[in-house]
Image (tube, rainbow, N blue to C red):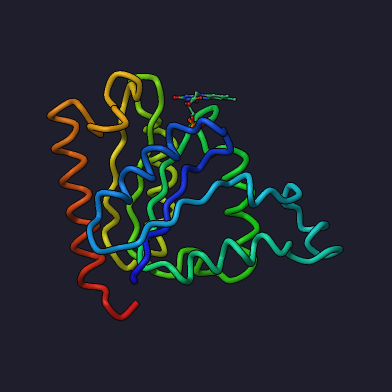
Length: 183
Ligand SMILES: Cc1cc2nc3c(=O)[nH]c(=O)nc-3n(C[C@H](O)[C@H](O)[C@H](O)COP(=O)(O)O)c2cc1C
């Protein structure tokens, strides 16, 4: 069965971004979804010296295998001080040392959410700008503001306008998944 890899770019055990990523993957019919927890990929903080002394950690290769074996990738970004969480950035840095093409040209869906009104839009802009540079596809994105008010475990995104924007991005991702049979 074809696979969607999903994760929240956060190491919080109660991550709202992990919840949003996992929910989004569950909306795609005909694919098995695999949700990763970034805590399973904790590595030393990246430095060129550590890489030269001890090489790239095994967890980075494991993470990379998940990317390679996926047919599509969903990431939901938590925002820490206007940027990536340390947990995500560390994995990003290590896997970028395995090969230059980090996300292996897979169809991707980028999300972000926070408890505030901006829905972590700042980190989303950073992530989209960076990840789009290596993607042959237009990457669908969606930021969900005020997670507590706008998301329900059973119903998903409650606000109609937000849900219709979410669905539009989800459909673009689905169309890329379905037309990317060869990946
Ligand atoms: C160190 C730290 C910095 C944060 N900085 C921001 C920020 O810049 N913008 C924002 O919207 N929320 C910020 N927050 C709040 C997070 O968005 C909130 O904790 C959210 O739940 C994180 O998503 P997660 O549950 O998926 O980890 C910050 C939280 C922490 C702990």
